[in-house]
Length: 134
Image (tube, rainbow, N blue to C red):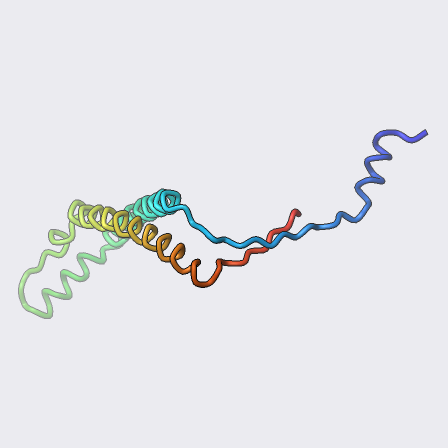
């Protein structure tokens, strides 16, 4: 008498044959490429904002701005106010503008990339991809 567990154990000991499939990528959907590139650009914009905030906080807390103020004052002989020029509000405002520009340009590049790939596929026949089932 063999139990179900013994049958399953014998079944799992067999070598599983992997099946490979080779497919050609001959079309990239335009709207899918735009949506994906938009989401990637938004994610990169958020990363840019967080990194900008963290770098400014580290530079401000370590006193780099005041050291540079003192160095510029020694070199030029005049008072300089680097913290006033690079306040958190101004730096984050510039980072927001860059993030928005990144979203627009990234989305446009994704659309152009999809259009170019679809045009090139007509000449080359597509990109050969291999897939397996393990």
